[in-house]
Length: 227
Ligand SMILES: [Zn+2]
View 1 (cartoon, rainbow, N blue to C red):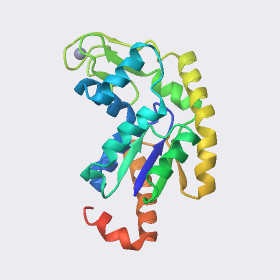
View 2: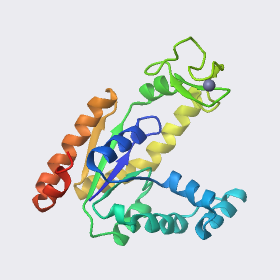
View 3: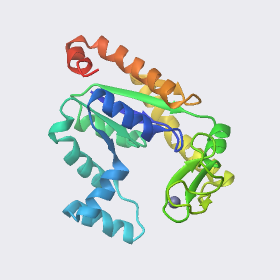
View 4: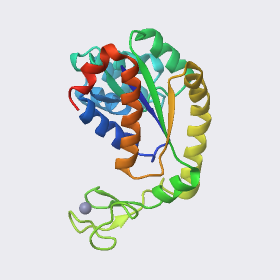
């Protein structure tokens, strides 16, 4: 089974993917991380990606699929995996389904209102010196505006401004709405309100997954034995 996590940047997808990965003992796969990894290791695919980026071009689907396929064919994905940040549109979703259609597919969206997203992201601070990140809402530094690790000054990232966040949210919505519609029609889409704390959201996601797995009883023992 594969679990696809959707949600706007800032909704906490990465954190939930990490928690799920531990709980279910299946890997989480972020296409962004995969691309960076290939570039760093200077693989054939990585060199192609780097050329694209250097020319200022978008990394095309073809290349993303090649890299994704290579990752998913590894042994640790046999029991399933969690996708974070992919697919982004219907084309990718359909192509992906065709390539790996043997798997069960469960789609969970962590949704967040634009206002909440602005509130969260404008509260983010990073250390100018070491890059450590903080959030004035959930993860405050011990001393105001100073990094716990190195004492450096905390600043807001340039793109964590309200207007930029709103623009990002709009792009996400425009891109994702058709995709959500597509999964909704397939009947494997679930939505979770992301305005709760991390452990509460995790509980809800896990309940959906458990429920889903129980429907496919033949796979149940496989997934729950690690619980
Ligand atoms: Zn620091």
